[in-house]
Length: 403
Image (cartoon, rainbow, N blue to C red):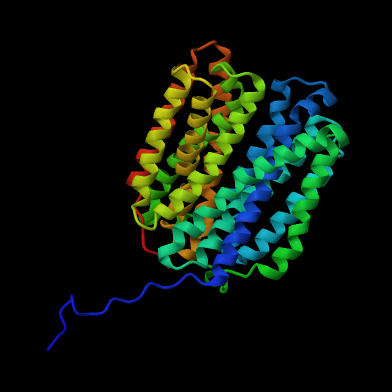
C-alpha cells in the first residue's frame, strides 16, 4: 500500500553550517570596510575643498568618479568572479581599494583624486557583488536571503564608525591620515581573508557562459525589472544619503542635531537590512520590498511636509533608514534568487552596476530641486516616484529556486 502524502516524512531542513555563518560574518566586515572607504571622502570633503580651493560643484567630479568606478567594477570585474572564483576577485579588489586609498592621501589636485577614487570604486563594485555571491553560496536555501542580505548591513555600520573616527582624527592629523588609516585597515583584511575566506562551491570548475546567456533568455524580463529596482532604489538612497543633514536643517533642526538625525538614519538602515533579510525566511521577499518602499515613500512625505520637533524627526529618520535602506538592500538577496549559482556574481554585478545610474542622478536631481527653492515636501515627493517604481518592479520579478 502506497503511503499517502500526509504520511510521508518531510525532509528536515538543511542546517546552516558554522563555516557558512563565518563566511557571512566576514562578508559583513568586508562591507563595513566599503562603508569606511566611501564615507571617508564624504567626511573630509570640506577640508579637501579648502585644500584645493574649489567649491562643491567642482568637487562633485570626485564623488562622481567613485560612483562611476563602482558601476564599472560591477559590470566588468565582478562577473569574473563567476569564472575565476569569488575569493581571488575579493582579494584583488581589496588590494585595489587599499592601494588607492593610501595613494589618495598624496593627491595634489581634484583631477588626480578623482582618478584615484575611480580605482577605489572599481574595488568596491567588485567586492559588493563578489561577497554577496560568496555568502549566498555557502547558505542552504532557507537561509540564502539572510546570507545575501545581512552583509549589506555592514555598510551603514562602517559609515557610522568612519564618521566618529574622522571627527576625532581630522583636527589632529589632517585629511591625508584619514585616507591612509582607511587604506591600512583595508590592507589588514587581506591576510585575514587569505586564511579564512574559502572559495564558493559553485566556482570550483570554470563557468562557461556569456553575459548575454546569464542576463537574457528566460531571465531577460527579470533582469530588466531588477535594473529598475536598483536604479530607482539607488536614486532615493543616494539622494537621502547625500542631503539628509541639509534636509534635516531645512526641516527645522539646528546643525548639531541634524548630524544626529543622519547617524540615526544609518542605525535604522542597519536594523532594516537585517530585519528584512530574516523576515524573508518566512514571507515573500518581493512583497516585503514593496511594503518597505511604500512605507518609505509615506515617510518621505511626512519628513518633508509635517512640522516636527527633534524627537519626532529622529524617529522618522530612523524609520526611513529601516524602510528605505532595508528595501533597497533587499535587492541583493532578490538578485541571488533570479540567477543560478554559477552566474550569480554576473547578475549581481550588472544589477548593481546599472543601478549606479540612479546613484549618480539622485543627488544631482535632489540638489537641483533644493536649489530651485521647491518646498521640502515637493523635493521628497519627487523621489517617491522612483521608490514606488522600484517596489512595483520587485513584485514582478520571477524568483527561481536555485542551488
